[in-house]
Structure formats: structure tokens, C-alpha cells
Length: 85
Ligand SMILES: [Zn+2]
Image 1 (cartoon, protein in one colour):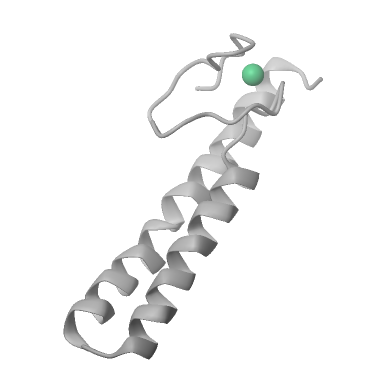
Image 2 (cartoon, rainbow, N blue to C red):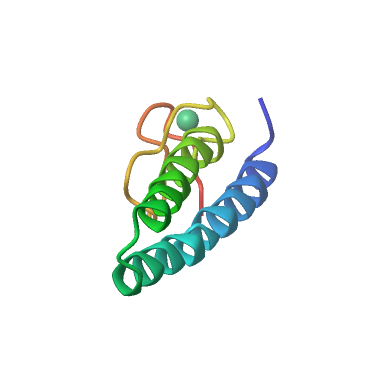
């Protein structure tokens, strides 16, 4: 268990990394649209799988480590009630 302020700091960091995943997602969508090519689709799918796997590890409550769900704008952990922002 971390202290309250540490939880918020860790959450901020995780939120930052979570927001960064939008960049490869957008690149994958754009590239997938402009290149009608099976190899490009394959790479795009790999990128999406990578983002999902990364999110499963990253997007967790700093206090209880439960998955935080789809929503990025959350203030409290649904499971342990820990304050996140
Ligand atoms: Zn929690």
C-alpha cells in the first residue's frame, strides 16, 4: 500500500502512458487506411494487440492494482475507493 499522494503521482504517470497509446493507435488507423496491403493490416492489428496488453498492465489502481476500466477520467478507484486525482 502506498500513501495517498504517492497513489496520485503513480496514477498521473500511468494516465500519461495510457494517453500516449493514442499515438500508435492513430498511426495504425491512418496507415491501415492508406495502404491496402495484408502486411500493413497485420502490423496494425499487432499494434492494437500491443496497446491492449500494455493497458492491461499499466491501467491499474496504484493502491489495489485492479484494472481501472475503459474510462480515463476517473477520480476514484471503483474497487478500493482510493483517490486518484
Ligand atoms: Zn483500487
